[in-house]
Length: 92
Image (tube, rainbow, N blue to C red):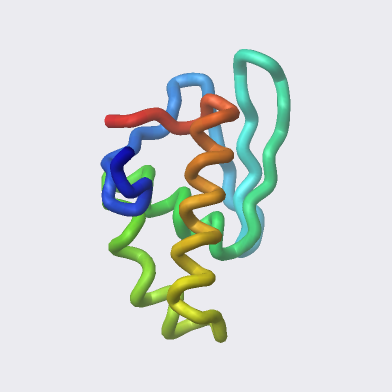
């Protein structure tokens, strides 16, 4: 299996998102479920919207937040897996 951080993703046609302060709220149009992303998740979502690889945001996040690189990468991989499992993103 390829590394989720090095994979290209696109936002699902079933997902619409709105930034609220430094967080993001996503609505899945197909099932009506809302999802909330904290500031780090919001940065990931923004990067995905712009067509960036998830790994490209890691350096900026490491400068902003006091987190170990391994922990950040694990958390981002977990979040990508959750977003994909809930049909909010899909492989590009």
